[in-house]
Length: 110
Length: 423
Image (cartoon, rainbow over all chains, first blue to last red; front, side):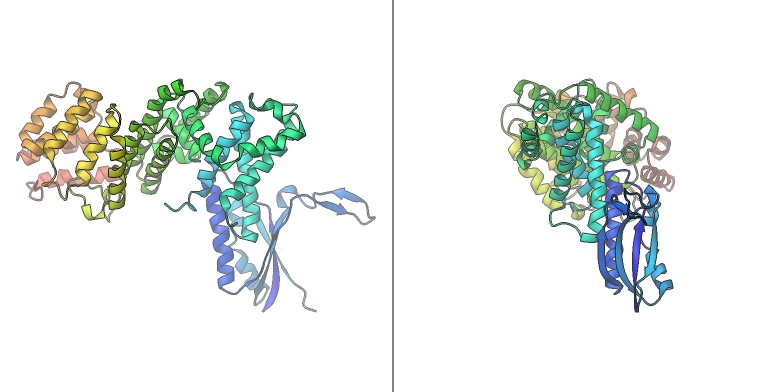
């Protein structure tokens, strides 16, 4: 098994309380499923949408680091057989239903 | 009911109620934005850190912090609640004032205050109900439209206009004004009653939505009972009525999703816990001298709920209760129900005679069960041809698929000689 990071990017706001409820439920279910199938290494953390970029010449500027709508909202550390399986696992993420996407990156081994 | 399923909806109502108190009712939209921000924040955090031990408190605290930010940022650009506004000018008083408004014991009153505010006399009853569903129960425009089987645009307009009326009313309802509270309480009762009926008899065929509406009406009515001045015998009677009707909900549809009349329902499926609760509430309602329509309707529901079957129902008592109801709040629908009870007591031809004597029965023309009731009674008299005609008319008036299936079945039963009808 190898380790991979899911970076969650972009996601639309809920349209109603019921909508928020459903999104939350989907996230909880998905996270639970990853754990139960033994893929979850670390649930990870949410990231604030703000920050600073320190440029090549060490000048400090406020974010954004990407398009605002594609900013990383959080990360999770998972275990999978290979990159293909990791990518396949990410497809269950509720972020896709909110017009977001997942970046899957292998953790370097050596 | 499981509160996790409705956590966000219910918290939305609670938080908006608190925030409009702080921001002022004219800033209702701002309050709704803050709620949405709090929900977004929960969606960002909870998936990674798990559900907090007390999700309600978490959402409330998040909303409170956002509210403090908003007050700081916009205190020069906006006016907030007139009675609190001056406390927001200074950092010394801003945070303590907001903290105070978020204290648990004040939140309950905030919900009640908002409920009374939604029943503004300048709003029609259906607008009051839509507003309560949207603000207090956290239903979106789409969900309210689904419940009323109305177009999204129509409900959006209705809620939008109602919110304008509310925002222009300057102040939220004053619960400490005993005279005004007494005066508006009947409107609040009507709105809760309509909300429940929308769930119970409503035109929507989506049963989960409908059961939820009934649950919301019961929740709002329970809030009335917890406030010393709103806990009138009428409030208890209404609560009793809702409990006793809700007790029959599990049996209203059979396993195929077909509508079952009171006569055909499997009474073992009734919720006997709710029957007991309804009975207890009805006893508590029996104080004072006021006899409201809710008392009488609850008593009727109680007679049904405690009878083992149609034959063992005390129809004599039911007819006399309907007589009382006609005296308090006469309507053609009440008269129709009375006629059906008379048919049970004295026989179908007497019931039909009563129906023909309903004063303003032309107002029932679009009501499918007016035709269906006549169909049933004609059938019991052995008049298959006439029964069939009534059921066919009822079929053209059906408001949802389960009503349609129900009348179709009746029409076909008339065709084969009504062999399966025995009552």
